Length: 133
Image (cartoon, rainbow, N blue to C red):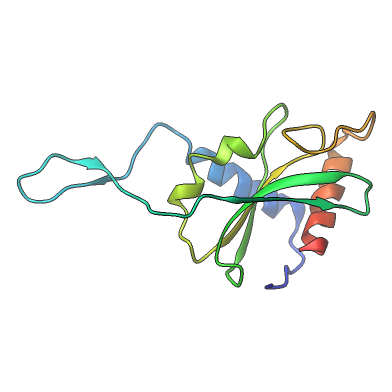
């Protein structure tokens, strides 16, 4: 698996925000001469799902797609959401990327500990995830 180089957390948040912006109600269109424009067809395999137990003490669920040797991209959702917030974006991303969409602690199908929901705790989980992958 391609090694994840250290990336500032601000960069990770920027990538997540940029990917989230792609959820705006726009669609890629394709058309041929004499036909009506239709949404572009993408034939991606559905995302794979797995869990990882982190040294921070939590188990995170994540969706994964794309080329395992490709450049990694991590998508982070907001509070009260899950990986599913990127379900509309994942099919639009080129398969040459290795994309992970996480369920952060307390969200989706990840562990729900009694404490540890400060931003620094969530960030520590993301760093631990990068180290694990």
